[in-house]
Length: 318
Image 1 (tube, rainbow, N blue to C red):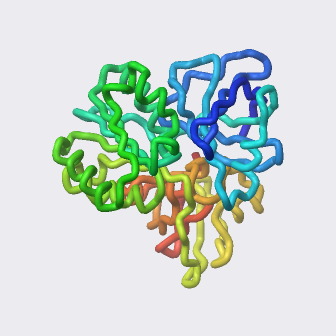
Image 2: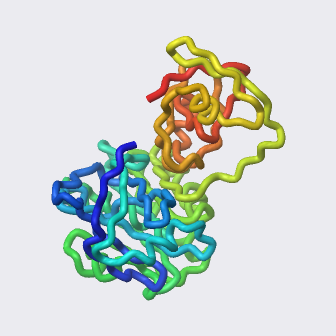
């Protein structure tokens, strides 16, 4: 992974716990454009690497914008980025995507909760640019905790397309989502990001209408994994090299130990950087980056956390 040094050019307090950072290259060269829905690796002043979604216009070339929520149980990533000041230097990686705009949808519905609005903002910019029909539904606890409120209510790209839902109970959230689903078809695309339980509810409500392949999810938390029944298996690369994966080791760690270069970042099954092709065998998916449809297809897997349901897997590194 190639890191780029960037300067924190501007900081905005979006809510009491969320700040946005506008980043420019130290050498003044362009940073964009990028594909809507992308995220980047960010290494803050403490050296902790985390992934953050890009939330500005994807066509912007002068700067990139991320938003960081200070987490109470932060392991040093979000807390450190809440201490940086304008003019500080940090390092970022190249933008990459799990979420992208579905090209053939008849309409697009973006459904966010809390900090989950960040990847959907860039998608809203793109959908506006291409003239697509879209609506952004944003669920927050209160107006004070609604990030990018001024932009959403007053910027031309958003103000007529945004529906704010503040202070909703879980039952009210479900009712609002059910109302959204009534206007969709089997050709509609739904994109969602937020807490895991919220995204589960969105998926449950809209899937009967649009189909699971049209629900696009961005996770920012690792899946809980039960490793008690894990056993060993064999991984063979398409080059013919073969490796034994013990019950207590990941595919990624064994490959690296044997000098195989694998692109990686979070190592928690969130970012998708180590996703590789599966040529033979059945993966045991344990990631939070591949979609339900991708997992059902069985031709890709995240090497950092996923395992095998068959004695042997043949994979192709990407």
